[in-house]
Length: 249
Image: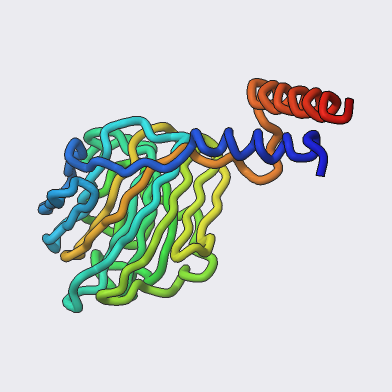
């Protein structure tokens, strides 16, 4: 194989190395919302929420748009069947605010009636426009919590007790993706406000989030590299072609 043919994959590999995932330090994250107890482990890379209470979030406090977050999630009890999940684009105070614009990704184990409506089992993504009240809006995705889509495979399937799941989240201004155990469950296009990654519990105790890593969000498939990236690739190709010519001479 010629040096010219090798140049492009080598240049792309070098570019991807700079976007390697980094461990997430949770020691600076903040809890908001209803009654909760978010206990960060000694390694600062996992957190355990032990209270069965009204909607609560544990968020980074930074603007995380353009990033990807991965890790593991596990409910370590057989005593309940309610909501676990994530928030994206969350701003401090949003849990109780009357006007918000962030994304809720929640996963309920079992269908259950509460607040005069039926909260459905399964994984869904919604837009929260008036916080996270302990009401039918948050329980049943109605009114100010507007459901955008349900998961491809897990849309009506709840999580299992004492079972660890891997998750991968991608959060950009125009696209949100959610994978569970490597399978793409949600891939939603739209216009999304900037804000924090966060974890979410509603009426569910004994939830652990662990093995957390953060990286730059990958570009959507089929996109054209930015001009600066193309310039680097071009320089690599020129250098490789020149080296090949010198070897032939």
